[in-house]
Length: 208
Length: 208
DNA sequence: CATTATTGTGAAACCTTATTCACATTGTAA
DNA sequence: TTACAATGTGAATAAGGTTTCACAATAATG
Image (cartoon, rainbow over all chains, first blue to last red; front, side, top):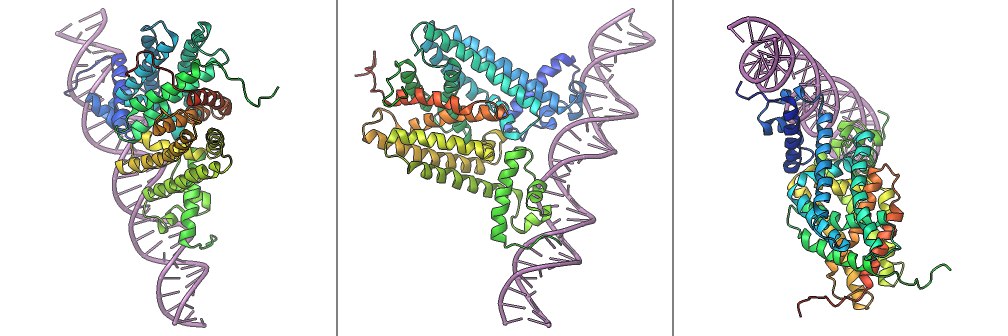
């Protein structure tokens, strides 16, 4: 036996991290017990000393992704006081983060695409909502400072904010890294921020 | 033998359509030869009379999705002359279309998530680009009529346009149909259109 | 040092799927 | 009607994946 023995709580972290790497490099299809084990230098059956099933490993991945995503939000906030500038910085940081960690996007979206158990779908949904709540909070502060239109619903604005990131990242993935995600997102941001800060127009034919 | 014999070109369409339904109901995981066959009332092996492999069936699904998506664009265009109103109408129609056909989203995104062959990833990328080209053309016309800011790159605006749809649809999927996609998209559209039509600001420290 | 719980290994048991093949049935054309 | 090509069927094959299990090696504990 060549492989060194390691405490199970350490192994769990290793396995979750390795699994995320596997998803990044081989996609959701390639996420197999054997691939994860190989990445740590273990034999497939060894993983069952630390997790009861592949399902629990996926749970661990989700926990890891959740940490990373939300931690990244907080990290991004502490750079600027201006609310709109904060949002812009958050966007840039997140883009870089997602491009640097291709597994995250795949994990988050996998449950929307693959059709796993309703329980895990709900779990991912909650994760995304937690992220959106943070963004909505930023929008709310911007409104109270008068930098953002007061007629917007912060939660809806947060969804729109997410829309600046998503297509750029998806296209980047689909193109195999060719698509200029940063440039596309930058333009989207310009449109977004112009609409975000503008005072609401008098609707031409609105309902009185 | 109970099942009636049907010409192979007809069967191909049936199989592609059935496969798309299977993806819609059971997700990408559940897309299995047996499931497709059952949906038409055939035995699994019968599918190989009409396709050489599951891979070719997926190709057929992609063709179907491509038709539906692009056809829908054209259908949406012929409703209004005003360019901005056209975009808005296109957005509404597409949202309804995607919600009515949950398989489409899953097929388009699956290659970004799953990690299939580079060939099919490129195929899906081309599909999305074709869609974006149509939207970009709409933006271009809006610019030439003076309804849309002339400083925007139409292709980038098209990507931003896609961003109005994507998060709403993804959240709708993740929430199991609970998330109010239409409302979220409507708000995003308001922000987008405000930013789209605004005359470009004098940049404070711009390059002259 | 001796004992014991923990961790790693290799083989095997299954399960699910895609795919093949010989044969049955049906539509079609001569 | 008869012969032939096209389509459907059921069983078998093969491959890949998860999971179990008896056993080996190691770390920890007394």
